[in-house]
View 1 (cartoon, rainbow, N blue to C red):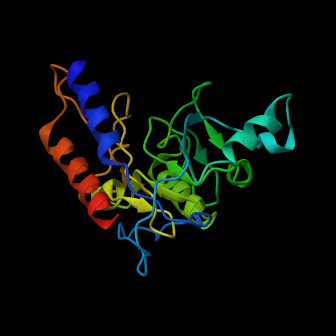
View 2: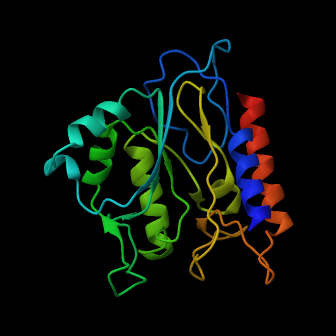
Length: 226
């Protein structure tokens, strides 16, 4: 779908921010969507690493395979390293599974420790598996990710929080995360309920303007704060 590709290209371009030295602290302020105060002057761009999804149901760091060390070394070169967390984190606060087949993707909190050891800093939480442990699981995953020290965006207690940008602690890099397609009914955040930041389409496959405008506004906030 051409319109969707053009939007994605625009979102990636709009999300590019100048980076600061010392990008080694990785948490964001939970739910604030606001840049941390006390940022230094803008500096030349540094090393951004973008990977695909992290569908990791077990901590690979505890079961290394040939080549993992080299992969980790490459990731650790990055000043800001991104992946999409394609699992729901199991905690005592999680809800009941919403799937009963092989497409249920959950993971223990130790997976977050592994992702951090591998070198990841930024996690997208908006995807079609975020709701695999129901709405309570969306919030539990977000809390576990933030407590682990990641900057994370794409889910929240309401649509405002789910669509808000997240920053690395030094304010050098921002993330806005959204999901489009195959989002289960009940998984998307609304003005009054928790869930993920969904980018919806109409019956013809066109993106809904209100969702596009909301996400572009979040990207604008990220750019202005950068």
